[in-house]
Length: 158
Image 1 (spheres, helix red, strand yellow):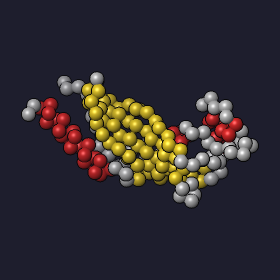
Image 2 (spheres, rainbow, N blue to C red):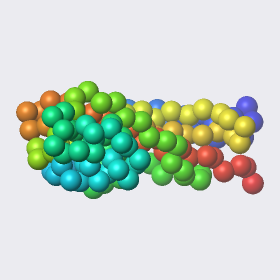
Image 3 (tube, rainbow, N blue to C red):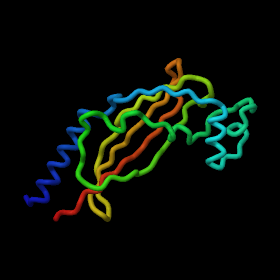
Image 4 (tube, helix red, strand yellow):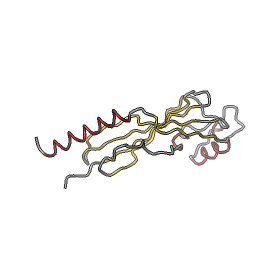
């Protein structure tokens, strides 16, 4: 077994250990309250023109679907989360809307590590951390899930 194979196996073991320790454990909880004007301003800034997102007087007024991606936890990562060696980058966002976000209600964001995995690309091996914030209303109804993918590209061997 080559030195590169040994290093690769150690890293896979580290990923498995991180999955066992951190996966699906809520590490941050934060509350938010937004006004209709804040939702409408966000919608207009994104180029939205549909009245249900831009006109607070509309009978079905709600936050635009991308709004949950603008919510951020107080803690970026859980305490003790491993610092994988390499170059870190934002790898994208995704939102799943379950129910409309309405103005004036208390929203609670609960953040957790949803997945950790590795894959190889043209530039080498990459480690992905998928951070999910689930957004609930004051009745604990899941309204939306906002995912942030973070990728660490391994540094090439010296």
